[in-house]
Length: 390
Ligand code: SAH
Ligand code: SF4
Image (cartoon, rainbow, N blue to C red):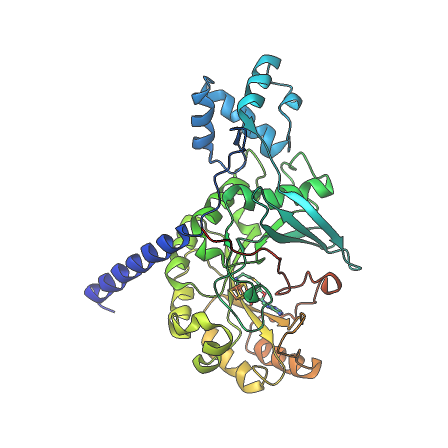
């Protein structure tokens, strides 16, 4: 591409980005203020926290202290903030709250995966899953209630988008899960043992709620609070091409791409967003992704659907697409849900597929389903929330 073409592409991308952000504003979360007028502090950036505290006459150092109590100590009660004088604690409690989404249902799978149904202040609900591993664990966080995209294999895709989650609700899912395991204060120096990683792989498309997701990730990455490094955070997208560069530049988190098909005709059908951003554009965005390197590869998620996308030919085409990229492939056996239209590929087909990808030099593990018995595995999340008329 010459410089002029590149400038035209950049302008188009910017226009498309503006359009996406304007559209997502229609699904904005309600303001984080209680009926009695008290303001939620979780979800504010450091600057915003300092500003609301200044509004009630507090000096800048107070924001640092309060931040520490909220995100390092996990405090939800101002009276526990022992470094703050009692009268100030009382004043803060008069104006502010430190909330958590309500854990309306908590289920633990036979494999110890734990699923939370979180209810937010307006009654809308989303699910969060904690997936423990031997010496660490990932919290799978939702970014939206429902999803605008309707990937054919995904349970969330059968629930129309109700609304975006706010930064408080996104961080709140992590904090609520951490409460459940009692892993406060946030471990310092060494990494947390239990809730060590975050995957934005729950309900919704994170890049269609970019501003709130970005704000929430900046909060969890802050070293004076929860302190989870960008290397331990993975954002999964179905391929919102214009937002991918921005996420890479501004957040620098790991990228996972829900590829699932290697030809446009099939991908158009099972991941309908492909009609807007076809495979060629998606792969180009992956090649540009700033936070990818050999040490931090892009994960290509590939669902194994019996008789649909699981032939050796598909595997060879996949290799062709990712050649030259710092990439790994995650093969996900299809997880069924009530009424789902597909079947999981046979183990023989999955192994053959995996071997072809591995022989080409790419790591290609088959993801063991976790929490299927409580509908907590990839693609099984859904809630009863519905969009009410504005
Ligand atoms: N919307 C984002 C984030 C959700 S991540 C995205 O699509 O990437 C959830 C992952 O599980 C995605 O890779 C998704 O394609 C995959 N998935 C969806 N339904 C599934 C199912 N029934 N079985 C296995 N994986 C599924
Ligand atoms: Fe939405 Fe992702 Fe499910 Fe597709 S796979 S419907 S983008 S949550």
